[in-house]
Length: 331
Image (cartoon, rainbow, N blue to C red; front, side, top):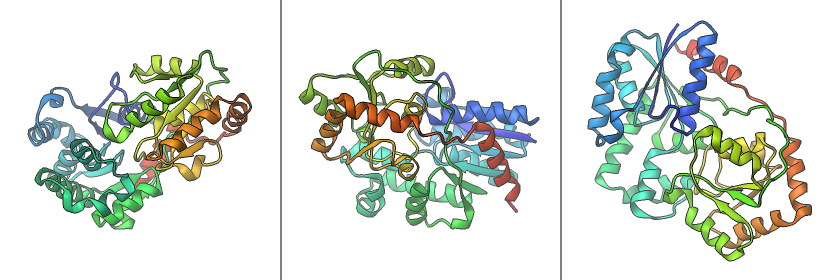
């Protein structure tokens, strides 16, 4: 087949969609399919609306030459991809990542509203622009051939908020890679690297570490390979956002057998609930107690062993087959 992958980011940019696009291109290619990736370049500097139109026009030749489209978000590339698919009669599968509307709202208002509460509590507080984004996202999701979620947690939120038909959706879990090895900590650093956005809750993490003072906190963003090397040497990982679906930093920490502190507001809780320390992201004392617990050597080794014992695998090859099975199931 001829497969088009559309994504807002692609390596060397870092993030879940970038890794998905790169690895699916390799997996589909090895299976004998022809794969083309279309991603943002100058679109990064264009305003919303103009960016969508530009990307829509840019992908038309690739759409025409493709059997189906795999798009890796619900709005930025999802909207123009589904629109083009409708016009030119192509099947379009959306793989959801985060929640663009919620992220935009939290960033604009500064309100620390949890993802699972957003559509229940804040729908009447959306700006005119956000109402348009909501309606366009709903149209995009409803008009995709299939919508794939990595967790039931996010699917339930979206079905309720956007009125989706559950039969139009599938669950395919995120990538769980093989263990990279056992790496004792080379320093006293907790890694909390992420974009400096309100929903990432970094101000809460900084406040906790300012009070504890003894461990160091690493917040910089590095290229993927350098970041993996930094994680390999680290003491532990902390990620306490207001909502995360399948946080890649936590999944990478597991591959390196690193103890971690994770938000309770996470889609993969049922999968990893027994191997990490989970906290309420709005409860500073709970986060502080979790960090203090990991600083105890006995507790640290206990949690490190729990991570060591976790051996669930879900490879890119398996995921590629599952995505193609979804395509083949579309009538």
